[in-house]
Length: 207
Image 1 (cartoon, rainbow, N blue to C red):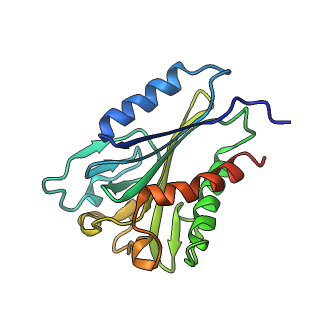
Image 2: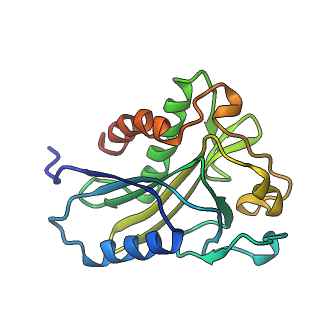
């Protein structure tokens, strides 16, 4: 039987990426076995982030958009207003989640949420994330420390997609990107958060 504390849901709004990265690190470093898991739903001002495996050659033309090195997995991606970012701060041992299970749970929750909008999406074993056809609609990047996860996922909802043309998203040249609003779904990230949250509760805590 699951005995972990109730999950805390936070919605801090539009918040600076560097500040959020600091907050996630501090939360993970200071948490104990009795700390509740937390899920943060938010947006970031425009920023390119580089994962620990990132090759800077995939950052083609940053222009005036800041570039920040992050301690997550994965390569280069873009965050900006109109994109729903979800950080999953989970005790993996307590929740019987390995890294593969966690990735699958996040992808499944996104796929189910999109299906409710009539959008048929799928995951790929060779490139974590969620895709509609050949176009990427959501990215994943995680870090595990002290058997706990932080970072998480980002879903393109109703944003300016132009900055993705300045990078090779997730290290793939010419990878097309799409978003929920262009496929008939809502254009409000917090509306998507409302619909995604119960799906995450189902997939993350079913084990």
